Length: 132
Image (cartoon, rainbow, N blue to C red; front, top):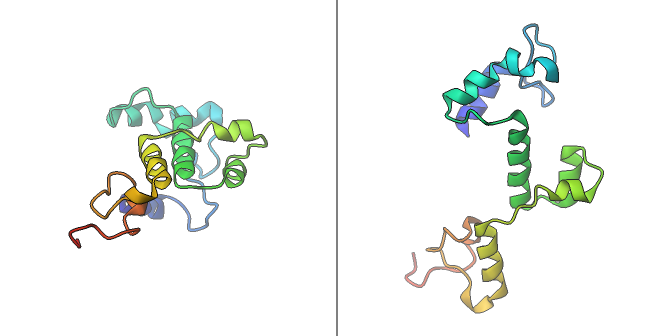
């Protein structure tokens, strides 16, 4: 994500709590003026996703974190949720995770280096039969 890092370095402050989206004077954008002030409609139309909502970004980020194995307690803290039920919304089942579970349940069929499409994080478990 070098492009994202470059963008954040150019348009946000160096502090880890720096705002990503700011108003004209550098302040917090409020919900009531976010779409207009950020040019949201034009931006999502320009990338071919005119129906994308800002909250979809939160959902995607938290789903990706869950898929990477972030603990439920950490997801709850990250999202500001008190209930397990609310945090569980981000625990989507995916085809790649289903494959990883299937492989884990079958010790005699551990994936090889050639099976990167199954689960990229498993590629170092066992060398492929051809030594690659």
